[in-house]
Image 1 (spheres, helix red, strand yellow):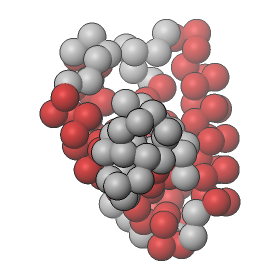
Image 2 (image 1 turned 45 degrees about the vertical axis):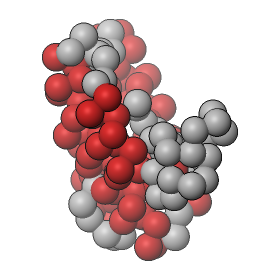
Image 3 (image 1 turned 90 degrees about the vertical axis):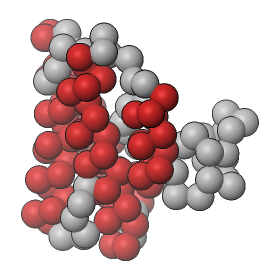
Image 4 (image 1 turned 30 degrees about the vertical axis):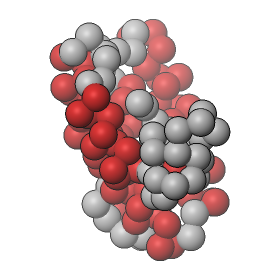
Length: 120
């Protein structure tokens, strides 16, 4: 399952990305010795996503990141495994077009990173 309520704009983007990075990387699901690499990798990915997204698309990405970040504590508490209900929340926020198979896995309704141009 892993890779925003904001709109475009530096502060919304930067603060949402930072909340997402912390939620993903500073958790029981990432070993302590890999957390900094995770933080760095997620930042690079989202910097690239921002380059690829229009201002309007940034808002969709921020919404997607917010949903993912909000679910991560529960995922960590569940042994770092998401539930089908959590996955459905991510798909609802991050799969912009459920008729298009963005990730190419044969299921057009389960894209978890379409809103962020294929990043986290």
